[in-house]
Amino acid sequence: MKSAERTLDLFEAFAATKKSLSLSELARLMKMPVSTCFGLVRTLEARGYIYAIKPRSGFYPTKRLLDMARVIADHDPLLERVEPILKELRDTTGETVTLAKRQGHRIIYLDVFESLQLIRYSAQVGEFRSLYTSSAGKAILGSLDDAERAELLAGVKLKRFTKTSNTTARELEADIARSKARGWYSNVGEVVEDLMAIAIPLKFNDDLYGVSIIGPIHRLQPELEKCLKALQQVGKQLQRSN
Image (cartoon, rainbow, N blue to C red; front, side, top):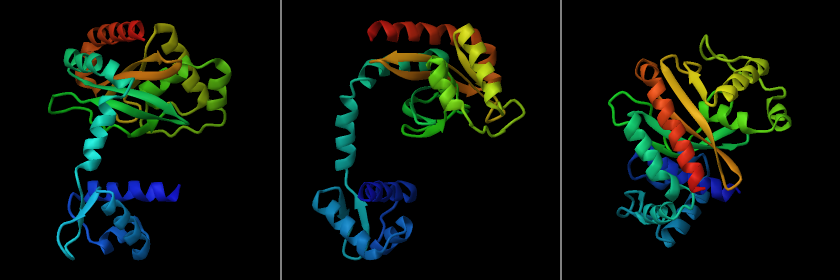
């Protein structure tokens, strides 16, 4: 698995620096021997994913990876069905909308539609968030059976980020129970004091997802009723299309 990690590390190094990199620079950023880095670069160069800018002037990725990613994304069996609906939810509410799935004790963003407003919640596809503090994570937890949720919460230590953070499994369980009873889940300043999120669970192909609306408290809270209505309508629409 190390070779896969190193390949991803290489592309992430280019994304982070936003410039061509010499072999020695890549090796330093990836914390590997130059000889190992050389082998990786030559393999990717031979496959058309990297090219040399000019002799001794460094390497840079070609657009082959981007083109391949576009083809893959365009044929994602889940996202091609939900993207138009989630984009419309973003446009209706004016706030950032995310689709997330659980991976272990975290959630991963599968799709993000950022608000078009200047001040907004920003995230990237592939980013991870805590299962226990995010609204989508709580929505997924609330949809698990009691035994599975209890197993996930057993022995978990919750970090206090703000004065409203849940700090024990008992507090989190009570939060989830209240949210499940009302039909939606929230995070109101629990990690970032001025940030708020609301979410609902979504079941697709016998797997659980969370759909969230996220934005500044001062803007989302006054529009809570409107946003909840739009979110719940989207939930029903997506379930019907399942």
